[in-house]
Amino acid sequence: MPSSALQVARTGLEAQDTRMRVIANNLANVSTTAFKRDRANFATLAYQDARVAGAASSNETTYAIGLNLGTGVGIQSTTRMETQGSLQMTGNSLDLALDGDGYFQITLPGGQLAYTRAGNFSRSSEGLLVTSQGYAVQPPVTIPENATTISVSEDGTVSAQLAGQADPSQIGQITIASFTNPQGLQAMSDNFLLETAASGPAQIGVAGTEGRGAMRQGMLEASNVNIVEELVDMIETQRAYEINSKMISAVDEMLRNANQTL
Figure 1 (spheres, rainbow, N blue to C red):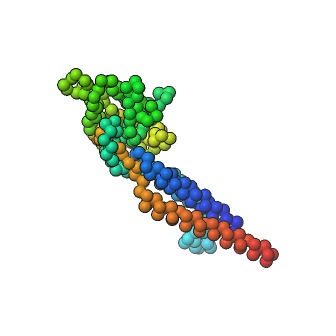
Figure 2: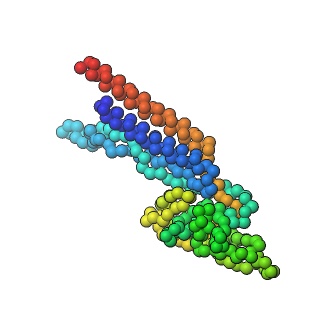
Figure 3: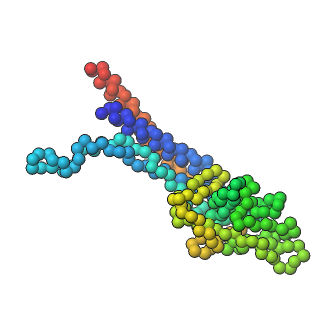
């Protein structure tokens, strides 16, 4: 029994350590544009059924309750919390935020599509609208060299005021991707997400339609990390880790006492 308790406490230490890593990553990204916090989900490990409820206790009776011994806990998954971050005014005409659901589409090297909520875009030397890494927004938007002002409407229409022209000219439209299960997207570095079988295929459409968020120019979406909430979770995780550590010490002492008795 003591050795089994050691195993159970060990799983508790590992699970709390993983949860602390998730919390640490949330806090590290508190200032990351459009970052979505993660939550660690726990699940019980397999149970050892020493006696099953309903088994015969005599020729005429059955046990009303069983004797089930748990083997510990593990991290089942991490859930990305897709709640909207606050919109912060930047005044930069190429900064875009989504007020609602959806993702910008980005072409990675090699042609693979990635998705992001971070709209801190800029103009490349070729005039393309790109991310800070230089990856082009999809569909491509080329900003003419003689453009004096750039405007992006709520539906993603991009217009430019060209030198010598009285009226602005439409130069492209940024469409938005949505997913049946956005939490199924695979997270990668640089604020990018990749489509998976769990997320379902990307559904491309105009911003502000069919449940997609509207586009806001001159704004960026902040991280949805709540520092106070993360600190509370951190303290709770620390206490749980300490309790499991004390459990290991207690069981170890029991084993020493038992060996001395024998």
